Amino acid sequence: MTYVGGIDVGATFTKVVLLLETNILASSLMPSGGHYQATAEKVMAEAMSKASLSFDDIACVVATGYGASKVPFASQQVTDVSCQARGIYHLFPSVRTIIDIGGQSSKVIKVDDRGGVVNFVVSEKCAAGSGRFLQVIARVLGIDINDIGPLSLKAQKSAEFSTSCAVFAESEAISRIAEGTPKEEILAGVHKAMAAKIFSLVNRLGMESNCALTGGGAKDTGLVKSVALALGAEISVPMEPQTTAALGAALLAKEKRKRNV
Image 1 (spheres, rainbow, N blue to C red):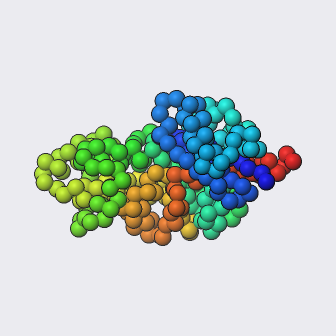
Image 2: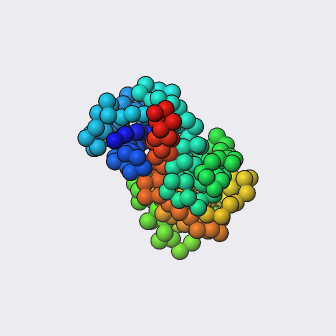
Image 3: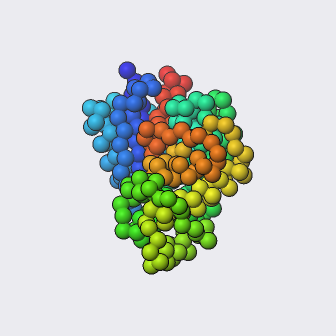
């Protein structure tokens, strides 16, 4: 039996997936913090504990993400775009457009019928199109970020935001609170603004049928609905949307191991 692993060291969270062939044995994630190497070692140890494995059992580990170079036990580093494409292709072979809403940025990736990357585009350096925007608004509204999606779906209408900048949108949200606008309407407005940013990214590549949403933003049901409405398309969401790049890295580790045997 050959065990392999994939680790995605993102700017916000670090994720690990362990595989036996194509079967997921264990996965783990935790905030990346300021010390990527220490976090990588800790989250890997947690995943191995879940699978009752040790480092000696792992034949190959592929690292990806912002802090991939800080993973001392990785056999290879691969771009997060390639890993996202590989992970989503494994889960949803018919998907041709991937939207990844991460903590610091968002990406749109176009893939072919074999899961290869055709093209991709990354959001500009602005929090408005990323999970960071949701964290800012959650803090302003005094709610848990996990409650944003369900609460936003209760809105009868959405508050209008005249800016696409996260900094000014924060000020607008504060003004809406002072005006007595319900929290759910503010959240619905935030989702609408984010969906508009994502729509513009998708437009730059050209929309391909069958779309999947990954990253922490995919856990927000209200945002998923807003993006689907903006694109006029159904969207597939993985059961664990934050670990798809780590899954892709593990699958690439499996392929690398087979080539070297």
